[in-house]
Image 1 (spheres, rainbow, N blue to C red):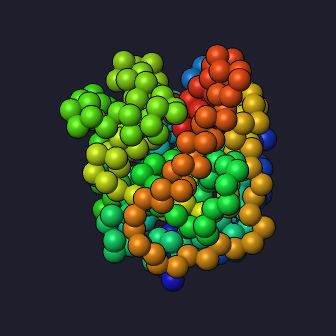
Image 2 (cartoon, rainbow, N blue to C red):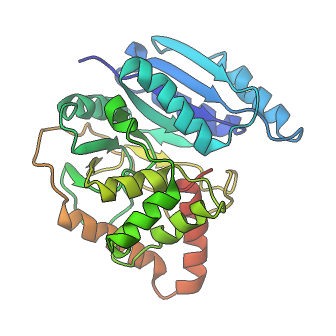
Image 3 (tube, rainbow, N blue to C red):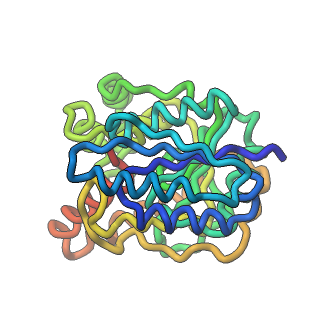
Length: 304
């Protein structure tokens, strides 16, 4: 099995990054994997010391087969940093595993991602592989497919990433023309269409909301694990989009998740489980919770 390179995108949170890297170092295949870290430039003088601290730590990283640090000379912002950085590495290697500086992984994350990349490499109906699953209450299969690529620990191939559509207005128009906005919103359980509208209006610069829209319009599916291999530690109010909550907290899988080739169709029960999760967030505290969820999801799903 030819291992995919790992990409980490970082900015100004050295403590989060330390946890992300340390967990990744405990992964099977870490010492056989090439690691690339994109360090975004600081926005203003207030962020400069933290960015410098991040870069100092990056120079101490070992364990991996190789470590390459790309220090941005200016601030790209997360969306541009990811779109450009993934293209840069994936053009060279043909595939990549992508993390951000606030994601702690199970020791079996790299194993799952690499095996899935190999199993589904030739099937272009599979857009990507995802490592995180919401804390749903239903029992899930070992793996399943949904039209929702996600952004919390993922992987893809060059011939899929080359299809990335940056024009949010074009995507939004097509969703409306095909009457898919309700489906896009998980049958009106979460306002993803509003997030795409906000992107087109410059209120966020989300890359993943456009990736999701492309996936739905082109019927491309993403493979998920039944148990989460990623824990998002960014919900502490420290990130680009402020918001502190345990809404997205999960228990990391303590066992490897088998990747067996299966029929590539939407798992209807898994989709219902996601819808249940969105509904449960609303619950009896609709207004307060939705405001909080939008902040958290804006960070976790629509980061800029």
